[in-house]
Image 1 (cartoon, helix red, strand yellow):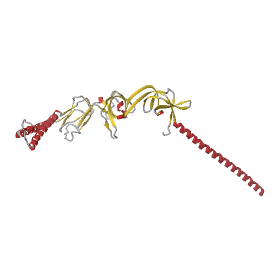
Image 2 (cartoon, helix red, strand yellow):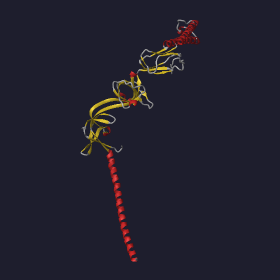
Image 3 (cartoon, one colour):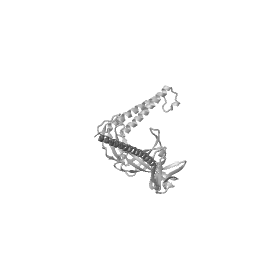
Image 4 (cartoon, one colour):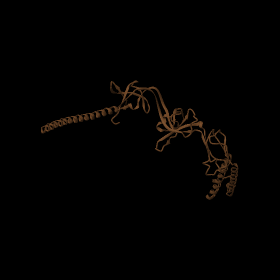
Length: 368
């Protein structure tokens, strides 16, 4: 029995030793596998980074269009706001918002009786000033004679000049009152659509303070145009008759075509210190959906070329005055001199040095 126990103990030790040896071998293999995996990861990362440094593209024939972009809004070339000049009572309103009107049409009238009385009062004031002026001249015996011909004291000269000023003011008051009578009815100077009537309801009394906020606005929607401000850097590239693409925020999936009709001759300072020049673009086709105030972006077409060889702009490099492109030949990257033409934000025309179908490469610089 004791012998059997010792024999079993010996077998157990041998088994444990064998297991220990096996375990050590497994750990070594596992460690080796881990090391190989780490090395593989580093190799893969290095290869991946190298691939990122090298981008390729094909030389293709395309239509190339150089454009300049600018933001702006829709405005009407022909519009007007009509106001009364003198406080009075509105007695007639012949229009509503949305009405179409013609040039010369009567729109709103105020009470002429009050305006006529005001004209008579101003005329009376004028006659009084006239009498005072003539009396002053008679008092100082200067009627019909220039002041430099008369010996007067400074005080007497001031009295005469004051009398002249009062007379001139009275003349102006009469002219303004007469104009108010003749303009007691607002007449539209243009054909268009009534877009707003503010503070001009029938029976409303217009006060001096309320005159500026009481008006009729008329817009000729056939004269809608797109107005933008062009940066001074691009000013030399814009000219009348130039074709323009317009994309409005309200109709972002549509392109409206237009033509430059006006290029400003005065630059305007911006808040950042730059200079912009106003440019107006007429819509080639009027669209009844368009209204004033719509915002959007424009693309001014500077130059168009059809069926030209192009490469991505970033592939073109200038080194020591030479324009070059990297080309892949027989699996190697070779630098070639090229002659370029039109360039846009993303593409460059190749005039000479490459052929259609050539594979070009962009090698990332260390600084990039």
